[in-house]
Length: 395
Image (cartoon, rainbow, N blue to C red):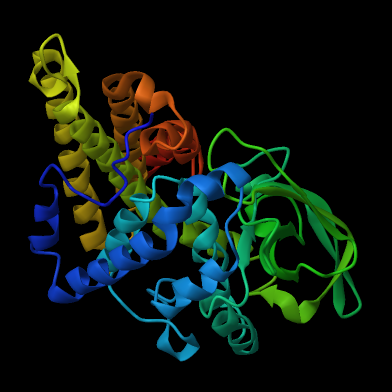
């Protein structure tokens, strides 16, 4: 049987991080409240939801009630304005689930809604944001296309003016929340080639000519990932987010927050792997002694702890700079690479320590192991991140 260490215990004291210079009683109180929500509303159902490839829609409403959906958003729309370290605490607690698909779809508004709040009209903000943050509506982001993902400047989905409307034709691929979403922030081409011809449109799910197809994935099973198709979809010009042909700026500005959150989640997933493997190694007996008493196994834990702690320090440094108003693009890119590689290393080592038990479904390590690659690709692949850093360094 798979090891049952999903109860939120922390057998190794990583929790000193919540008592450092960046964290206050407010952060610790939020962690406690969120931890209770995760243990009560999600943990008992994770295995079932992962197997059936979905979770109940009422989870959004419950997440709103405890403040999860609104964390970091303006109070005027039902959110709670907080600092960057609340984002870290949130990502770390949600990672305890050990099923990234639940996190990705439950919090998909974190990539769909920010462009609206950053550049949308006041009417659009008040029409969309309150219902999304209340868990009544779901808001996804649609940028990636079948022809490419990270090359945002060359998207092909086109929106052509037709009176007071746009006619949208094209398709999007690998869209998180794509089946359930009520609203989509969609990148379209309204002008010429390159980044200066891109706009963002808000498109509602019930518009004629708009269809969706679910996609099967290696990991993130509980996430409703979809391909989107636009066939002469008529969208009013009032649904334009920001200025026409200036959507690229809104897309890029959102990536910094996304990468910080992904890095926090990846490192926390690495910590989950460490903790479950350590709990197993302390109980499992091999060749007359605990698995944890074998030097080759002990060294694995030392190396995992080193990588996790180093990544955590880098994570907190980057969050501090973001909180101070900086936009450390290069460091956030490097951080994402380091965090996802730490996750990959720890998932592999934990799987080796758990052996056959770790390969069984229902084990957090098994699920995390399947999700390593999507974390290294989503939000900007390792290769794109390194190239972005080189450009920032003017190499």
